[in-house]
Length: 443
View 1 (tube, rainbow, N blue to C red):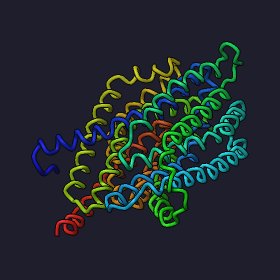
View 2 (view 1 turned 135 degrees about the vertical axis):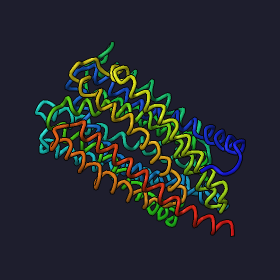
View 3 (view 1 turned 30 degrees about the horizontal axis):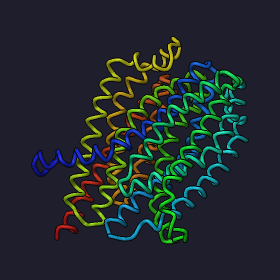
């Protein structure tokens, strides 16, 4: 796989890690904000953790659509920069794009509240789920503004401030959660409503703060560029569909098992939170690879393109092997971070054994997905996610869950096999694409 001397690849490893480190911090910041909500909800009571697990599954399935469309900003601009095009003029277009997407997704989130009672959740959970989704829908404006600006800056390899803001948000969110959920000092006890209000405040502050930093880009960038928006949608919609298919793969399980028992929904939420935390590192590597590969692709530099692709994939794979081993040898330690409830522990521990294997394939597929995004081959990512989750993972998981009485564990086995299939498919596609690019760029 690796061609060139070891010293050369050490340079690429160092460059990718230095670029990725702030992104890793920011990604962990984002997921720890959610993990903080799960932690506080678990401490508040069983109804709160069960309701937020279901509510988050529904709201995130809607939320992720816009994130996918925004994720095209850095690959598109990186390719433009590699082609030596002017890119600062696209700043305000990126802001408009972020806020229009936020408006659409906020409206869809609010409409989803009307259908909660019809899904069939336990009666005491439905009002809590609706309350959480209705409030957090308005936090989408701040979240999308922050993400869109982060993508814009990332294309210039400016990654420190956007991700430091996400890290700081962890502490603000936890503090607000404690005050608003449990009721401290003059604040009343708001329960799950407090979690939602905290998310609204924190996400809004994140977006506004980053916009104030970026005001220097506003000058000369007020015009709408239809060609740029067309490129964002063209590259972004397959990413969006791919993310939606992936999130629905996970979150439809929460909804299915949540109708059986709130304990299953809570267990799924806890293990998914743990898996998501470790996933943030290969995701950051993937983001960095998309920028580096995109720039090399625009410049038609096959050597740089290949070496960044190989190096990033190797880092992501090794990291997830290590975390998978840790999950496998001490599952109880990780679960007890969130809960000591015996019923929840009994459900969560077997899931974490499967997640240990699942980790490896998840890291591999997201790294390879970063290469495909850099090459603007986002439709391949969509197809891989659809086939992996909806042709293999979910049907097989359903068979194991209900046909073999494995319930939630059956679904996790199905998800692990889905990610294995996605990884193999992406490896095959990229091996063919690299052969084509080598001939095109080096001749």
